[in-house]
Length: 105
Image (cartoon, rainbow, N blue to C red; front, side):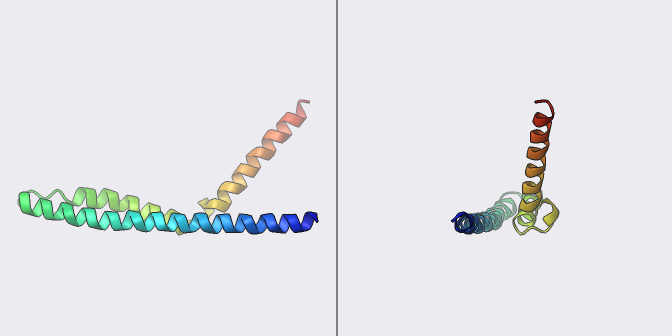
């Protein structure tokens, strides 16, 4: 019975992780669409109101950098710092805390 419950928990855990990943991907695409639409609007405003003084590239560049990093995180371009790394570090710190408490009891 314990094994069946563990398997069920693992399936639930897998579902939760997959759902979270899909939500993160949707969030990235929402950010990307906003980036494109807002920057098209800003380029239009800049070219219409002050074509001699171009400033649209500043939000294009800085927000674009944010979009790139967001995408790198969502699509785990550097998996060493992905969710598995976070969970491994959390477990490591929890074990150190437990060992430290046991040492002084």
